[in-house]
Length: 127
Image (tube, rainbow, N blue to C red; front, side, top):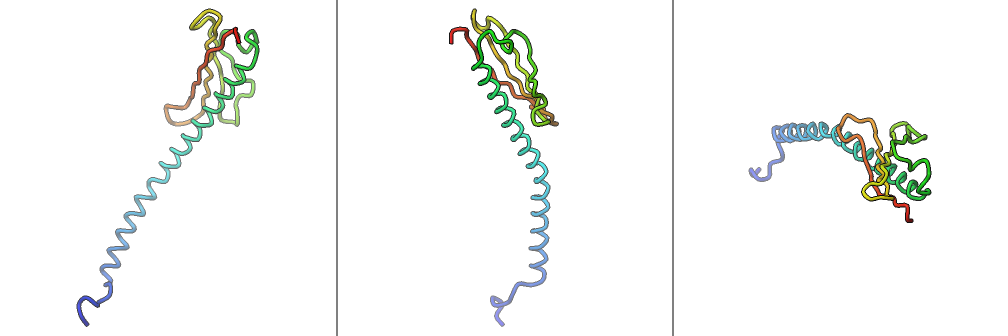
């Protein structure tokens, strides 16, 4: 037999298996991290949607409604989906007279620092 016609030897197969095992072990180590990142992203997206929903709701009610009085308000539906807590803060005459600044904050439990989302808007008495 010619040297070029020989098959793959046992040593080559073992080396390929070792390299494949090393690559697979590195790939398996990244799975928990990617799962954590995906969960964090999902929570931030859901929190942003909940904050935006509340902003839309507050913009549709009359200017003198009790939900738009100055101060901090807790959502009566808290905890939302057993995981999110929504509050909003109203500041009168800010940045101009007859305007209100509304900040809606949604908090959620996580090990990371960015466990809250805040969405802001201005509401005027002339709408």
